[in-house]
Image (cartoon, rainbow, N blue to C red; front, side, top):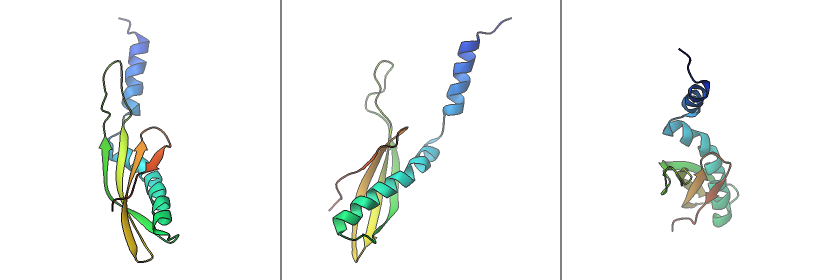
Length: 107
């Protein structure tokens, strides 16, 4: 009996490429901290401010079908503290790219 090689290779590639939510969040976390800390340092006018992760979540795309699919995102709530001030910045990273953005700090 002969097995079709293309479907077998495609299935193997999918299994190897899969990672769980924790691994994905870990992979994007450093970029999220960096972008949020940079924004926080600017907003607080404090170059010594540092950031730490308060929470993180994997956000699935709104559209996720066979013909149209959105991008999965990692969302981090980063606490920024320094110079006697504190604020929270939301960092969102697009999974599979080096793109992260720090959103308006919560007041």
